[in-house]
Image (cartoon, rainbow, N blue to C red; front, side):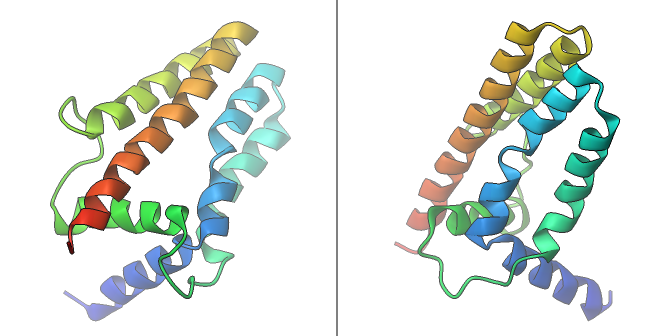
Length: 145
């Protein structure tokens, strides 16, 4: 296996761990839901493009002090070094699975133009995703202790 993909992956995650990258991606799910609700295809495309290009726009942070930096690094650690998946019904992954299910609910509600359901689903999506990241950060911070 070539070293280039590993180097690219490390470069990508380092840049994505910039807290500006992480925090500016948080509203992407609700923006997608809103765009679907409004049938605003330009906004939907912009949100999807933002999701793809966002990690390339920010420099790697100088340290791991920021919570969002540790959240992104914890996610990579959880997947790569600990050999875990990101979904499931065990441990912290139950929260990320809940976030994925909330996203499906929010998208369905938005498509059906049910604002209460779309809003609730989008709020649950963000809340459960951040909760999952918080649990990973706690484990990540304890790994070296």
